[in-house]
Image 1 (tube, rainbow, N blue to C red):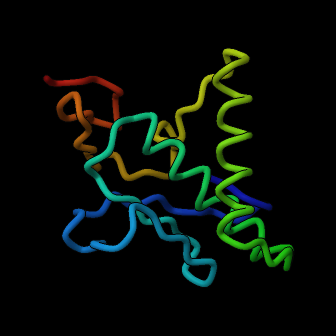
Image 2 (image 1 turned 90 degrees about the vertical axis):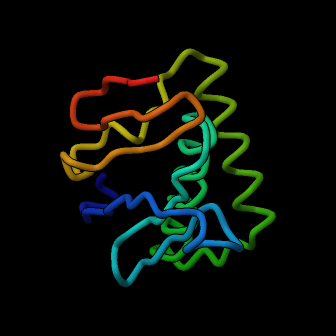
Length: 116
């Protein structure tokens, strides 16, 4: 995905490698790591949350975790409540061979098909 013209990679990581968090943003490496064991809604909300962290870092807003959490919930609710599709996993920047294990089976992100 793109943010302020910069490519941000989204990586799906085994939860064992991120035992204390479901998501992590790294401005220097231009990436967001997300655990691969969440539902689609939780994954998209987490990507939004980590994107807000990146925006805060890029603009020196110094948002704290409570503020980021509030913005994530407010923005995500606004989008969903108004029928605006939220699917960051469709990003063209995700490698074609990348697969995501969600609560409904395995979703191949290259062609958006699902095997249950």
